[in-house]
Length: 189
Image (cartoon, rainbow, N blue to C red; front, side, top):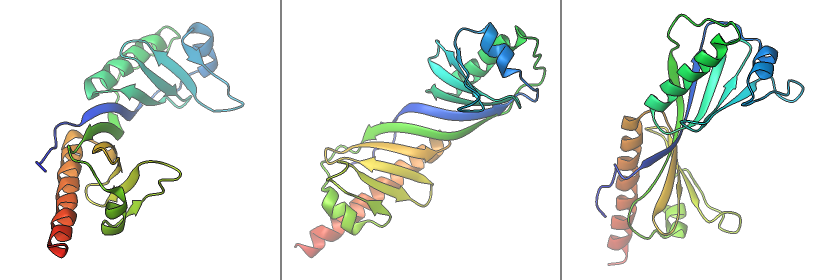
């Protein structure tokens, strides 16, 4: 198995930002057609952005949660669009908001078939219940990442906050799986 780290494709970034200004969600909901606001059910307003396709939770405190983007550049672009829409209802954001990545979801593969039953027994911090879900959940300690591993070698990684953590987690996954395979090969020789 080769060391594969960069075949991970970012599928979603969840990021937060604070605008430092109060926002009237009722006013925003009335002025913008691309919103959903049901304060009885949830305190935030959902603002949908067409390009890049994403959704932003806007809270009256001026805090934002952005989901659906695939890069930091897209997150910045979405936050700028939200600021422009807020200007239409009189909210002037003058300071550049600090954007914090909370989670990256990426997909990829490690290019070998995996025996999930063996990995569930040999790796620590796993959950595998094939009757309920066909993937094995594997949690790394460092970097903090959780993998969904499938028998065909495909995977999903979540929990990292930047590309370096994402790549490091993939290197660690490869190393841990290799060690299990090497150990089993010795035992069966």
